[in-house]
Length: 236
Image (cartoon, rainbow, N blue to C red; front, side, top):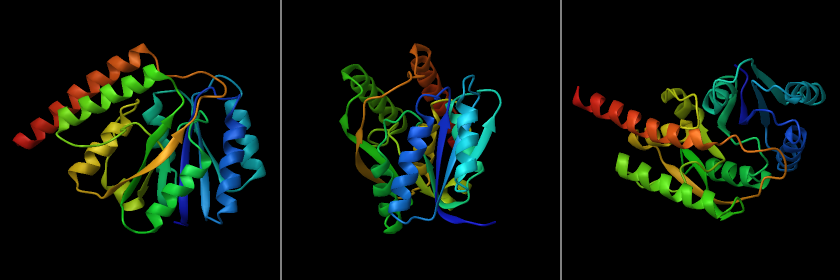
C-alpha cells in the first residue's frame, strides 16, 4: 500500500455551506507546512450538495479523497469509514463544521512527529461555542472519568491523531458520537501515550450543529453500556 505522512478525515453531513472552505483552508496550511498529506472527505449520507462539492474538490486536487456513505448511520460510522480508507502513517479526524483551526492540525502533527506520543488530541483552551456547551462538556468529562477510573481532559475535542498501528490495534465499534470516548478509553487501557495539545475552538460560522437532545441520551446510554462490556470482559 502506498503510504503518506498524514491522513485527515472529515465527516461531512449536509455541510454544503462550508465544505469547500474547510477543505481549502486545511489544504493551504498543510501545503505551506510541506507535509505529505491526504485529505479524506466523507460524504456521510448528505441530502444537500455536499457530495457534489466533494467530487469537485477531488477533481481539482489529487490529494483529496472522496469516501461516499450512502446512508447516514451516525457520526462515528462516517469517521470510521474515512479512517479505513486512509493511507497515512499518522491518521486522525476533525469535525466538518469549521470550529477546529487548520493551524491546530499542524501543531498536533508536529507533536506526533517528535515521537513522544502514540496519540495526540486537542484540549480546548478557548471555547467560542457558548457557556451551555462548555458546562455540558465538563459534566460529560467528569462522568467518563468516574465511570472508567481515568483522567482524560476534554474527551470530545478534536483534532485526534494517532499512529497507524494504534488504529489497527483498536477495533472501533461506535457508529455515533461515542467514537471519541471509545477511542480514548481503549487507548488508555492499552497504555498508549496520549499527548494533549491546547487549541482554540471557534464559533461555528455557518450551517447548524447535528448535536441534539437525543445525542445526550445516546452518550449516557453508551457510557453505561460500554462500562458494562468492559466489566464483563474483565470477569472472564
